[in-house]
Image (cartoon, rainbow over all chains, first blue to last red; front, side, top):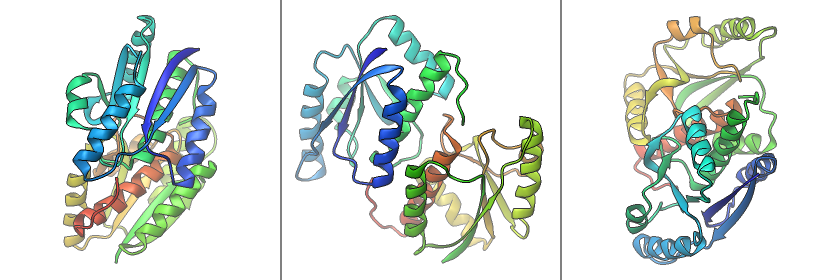
Length: 152
Length: 152
């Protein structure tokens, strides 16, 4: 089982999203040692909020060799190429950390610093649902890498 | 409120997805008169199953002028262009029907017949989660068309 850090901004308030997060975290247990770090949302106007969150995200990513932002402008993988990408990262033995931002997204300075960005969809989704979608794709990637059949 | 038909194959079994579906159906009430039709999954091997489901989907779409398939190979909208597309369809007064297939997807014959296809993501998601993702985007489209702020 591979160590993977998940950095999330803010709590999941929606009950359905919370159940789904727990569901996928549980399924992922057999594949990865997940270290989920939830940093609090920033305060003030959007720019100030994102700046505060960016600082917290940087600290939460300390020690991670390959940080990755989930970002609608990122690389558009399909599930197979996402699995290949993940497999290559693991083969290189890199510590991976995935970041899902808050409702306002991620601060520009963080986007400039962290080059690796993955898009789940060109569409904008609520960040709570994005967290669920990412965990589902992470789980799907592992099942693809293991050649396991997994119900769509 | 605009009439929109939703055609789904199979029941949602996951509790989190069920809660989220109810959540978005409720939010959508102010914007659309949704007519949700759930057709049973087909039986037998995947091809036979999809063929059975295609027949049921055709019947469930009767009377709909503009049927649309949710399909990973479809047009890749972002949330803004999806809203524009929806607004144009409504301006033309067309009755709209959206189809989310089962775990095996949709039969090729149906994909040939129905030209209008929209992709939620190049990634493959479980069909239960796709239903939730679609309802969220439909709701987001309406809020974009109405110029309402909506929390990401």
